[in-house]
Length: 152
Image 1 (cartoon, helix red, strand yellow):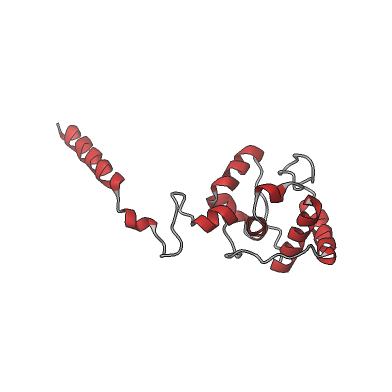
Image 2 (cartoon, helix red, strand yellow):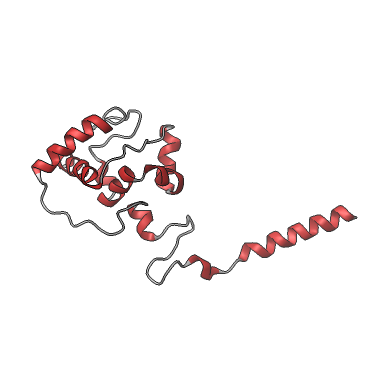
């Protein structure tokens, strides 16, 4: 009998907690939090230091060349441009992800892998975490410029 009362109490607690207060899902008037706990911006553009859309102009060949050097040193051990390797291929990356997402993944891979649903899917597919390469914002921007150059 005592066991039945405990089980009934637990079931009641579970049922009452499922409804919840929907107002908790709003972080602010501008950024509604999704079921993953991320804002709409974070779902589309990733989690990290890039918190607003980048203003990109024509590709800067000098910056792209610097980005190619960095990519060859830091990224190519795990990524190829045209084929699956340890990580996903990069040539078509900008067709799948926003520039802001790419920057946030470069600059904040640990948090992206823990919290972002799309990155979690990639992690389960590739079975390899992306290490933090400790690039500066400027270096990450150069890598992005290289990826813009190779994707055109």
